Structure formats: C-alpha cells, structure tokens
Length: 234
Image 1 (cartoon, rainbow, N blue to C red):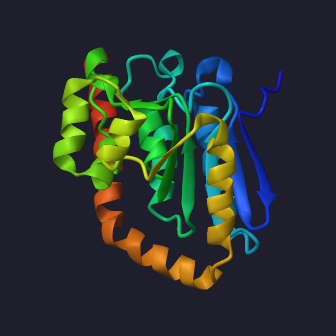
Image 2: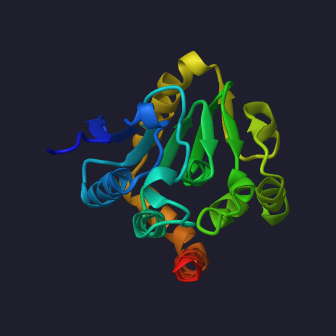
C-alpha cells in the first residue's frame, strides 16, 4: 500500500508553499516527510518561476521534531541529516510560519527560515536533554539565530518558551495572531517575490557561503554521534 503524501506543495505567484501534512503525528519528521521536504527544496532551487519559499504545517502543531517511533533511541537519522544539509545550499529566501509547538528538530526546522512568523500561541524549545539526548543537528541553527549562550540555555534547560519570549530573544521575527498567521506570512512572501530574483539569489548565496562549512560540520558531528550511539547499543 502506498503511503499518503506528508508534504504538499503549490506555487502561487512566485512563492512555493510547502505544507507539512501529518497533523495526527504533530507533524513529526519521519523519513518520508524529510525526503518530501528535501525534494521541495531541491525542486524550488531549480525552478525559475519560484523566487521565495514558504514553509507551514497543518494542524495545531508546527512540528514535534524527530519521529521517535521511527528513529527509536537514535539521536538523528540519515534522512534528517540530508534535509538539514540541503539548507546550506538553498539560495532562495525561506519564510517559516509557526503555530503551536516547534520543538527539537521542529525548532531546528523553524529557524531555517530567513524570516520566521510565529502565532501568538506558539511554543519553542529543545527538550532533547529530558530524553537523555543532545540536539547535535539543530543546535547550530538555533545558535546562529540567537547566539550560543541563549541556545545553550534552551538546550540545557529543556523547557519551552512562549512566542512573546521567543520574540524577545530574537528567535522569531514577528509574533502575530494565530488566525492571521498564514495570511500574513504569505503576504510577506509575495512582497519578497516582487524583488529581482537574481539579486535575491546572489545575496543569499553570499550569506550561506559564510556559514556553509560550519553548517556541514554540524551535520557531520550529528552523524558521528548517531553512529557512536548505535555502536554503544550493539
């Protein structure tokens, strides 16, 4: 039996809208969802009619992070590593629209956004430590956004923070009413898409290139930690 699609994409006036549609699992990142997002990233990068990407999710939660049922006790999976590696080469603007919970890998996914819209009911955190894990893969993305000290506080505490506190720490760009989240994020994406596509692409390539080595190093460390963890279990 063929499984249903968990990532739905549509193009609207230069904006590629990518929707994670796995609400019954709080949009947790299983291998199929990671691969679906990866295909969207790669397809958008090659499409001349797409200037801006918008990532959103169905249901009350943005993303609960790693699908623990699929991954077991692993720190991460190859599918997650492939997905986060792809961002290092993404030269088109990415906006994320976050509602409900964005935790662990879900927070890492949210902060991939160059601009992050958060609903006023959103909650953010890195709770891996409460499961005797460490967020090797997503920590650099969070650290890049808010600085290492604030990222460490989230990772060491393991607790969640609300949208207003996330905005105060500059984890998100804007907090908006939950009912207006999608409309405001899409309006921002359309506004961005009116700019010269070549200028956007050149500018983002310059930005990504400055941090690419660090980013790919983090992915390599995550893979190493996963291999070590699995080796200790055998």
